[in-house]
Image (cartoon, rainbow over all chains, first blue to last red; front, side):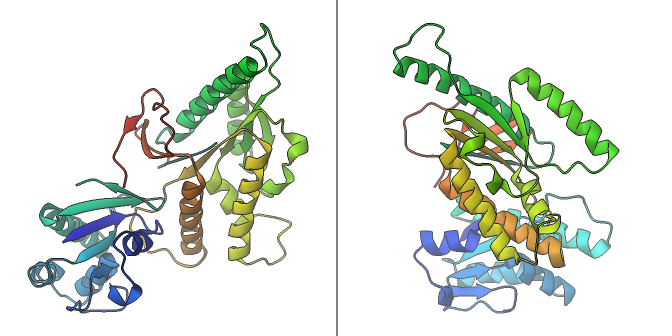
Length: 125
Length: 214
């Protein structure tokens, strides 16, 4: 598994599609989709999917874990969401905390971690 | 040469960009003089230009601007105020051998999107394209262009409406300018981290940390 992280609007998806020679049909869009399956090579907007799972009372961490064992070649693209003021709303805090912790776990298992900034990828692991 | 400098608020990106502009200006002065025979006391006709984008609309801003102006005068910058319509700065305002610091893209875009009195209902796509093409033209009128921009993309908040659009367009502009730039720096706690350099064999400027980029 590869993890690609970066701020909103930094060109993460374009970076991945170009670098790994993939197309839109290879992408599961976490903004709208719920299930990653064998056809998908890229899991985009992991943060939005994660948030929606939390809102529905689910356990996205477990779902992410089982994904890794079934799709070890998956590229996960996620927004950096932790570099702001810690929000007052409890759900917003929980979202950042749980997503952050989950990403640390994913990054530890990932064969590479890249951070995209201004469209430029930096390999940080 | 174009240099893009991006960082969080109060990250030291402006101080780094000012220092980089001064450094480039000195290098340019030396190289122009030597090209022209290295004559001693040759009057180098370049200028160090600061394009300021803050709109002065209250006492607090006024005071802040005054303070900044004074500091920059001491550094040798000539300040031109362009809160919007960057395209008004043309060849007539700039000497060929000038080093221009645009401070900053994030203000300029916000002013263009939300505060341009000449705005006649242009859509944001057009505005963003105009800002990019104005910057491209500006580069044609000077020797070096150094652009400062903000990192406003990592707080995880779900903004609505115009703020969300502003973030989207600033992100796009940062990416397009990064692609055009010879050098891109991210400044973190005052430390410039170079994330792009066009193959040139030039050494990193003092204090810059090299990072592997892919």
